[in-house]
Image (tube, rainbow, N blue to C red; front, side, top):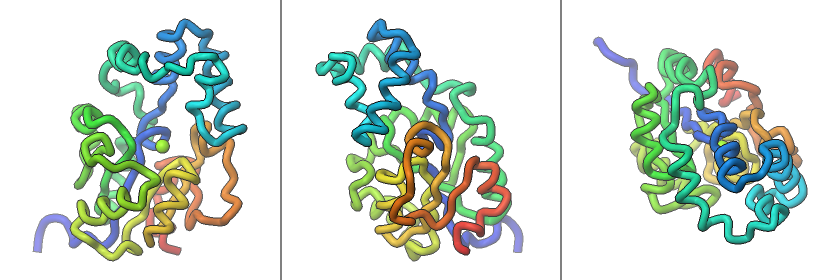
Length: 217
Ligand SMILES: [Mg+2]
């Protein structure tokens, strides 16, 4: 026999604050709204802490019609760049595949991110964005679509890796998957896993790639 060994388990990765450091995205919002970057980023943190909903930062700023600004932010941000990736993103994909894992990238993102990530060398076995799927986290239908995209493996053979307790950890566990909580970025560092929903907690993708089977222990 030659080629890759039979896929036994899947590791499914989120994008925001997992593969991609969103600093430039949120800084683009601050610049477009003409708000000092520190003020905007601090209000994001305050909104996450106070309400668990970062979009309330726009209420604090007095910009209730912020969604009208989205096209302008999208133009100013452009496509993802190599320096938007966390430094361990590409190497972790390689490491996970070398460990025999099937690797997927399925996340709440605009459809354009798919091609942008491929162009940056993020080339998993399966990739899909919510903007193309028409369903987003934390809807249970999103996790059902993941299983279907992976060829319907037993859910317990799929680990979902995300930074958010509410959008990633709790719903992936509810879908029968192994829930891996990546603690980086403001959503994770301001949260607590009060319900003990995560099967595994890591602080980098490199840590997970070094021992992905830890998600099943
Ligand atoms: Mg995320």
